[in-house]
Image (cartoon, rainbow, N blue to C red; front, side, top):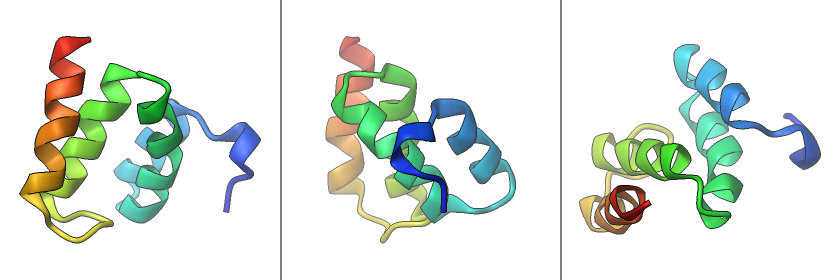
Amino acid sequence: MIAQATRTFTNGVAAYGGSEYAIAQEDWRPLTHSGDPAAQRNLAHLYRMGLGVAQYIVQAVPWCRLAAES
């Protein structure tokens, strides 16, 4: 597991590319709360598709909306 201090958007992309979806969401989640629209969009995608998290469209919608507003 990557230490919290070294988590980056790029690390999440690499994890996603390696089908490590739960790790990708762990990397992206802190960034979503800091307002990163790309991380928000990607987290929404994980929820929409049920990758690394339970598929939950209701959770995906607010992240999509935040990303779009950014």
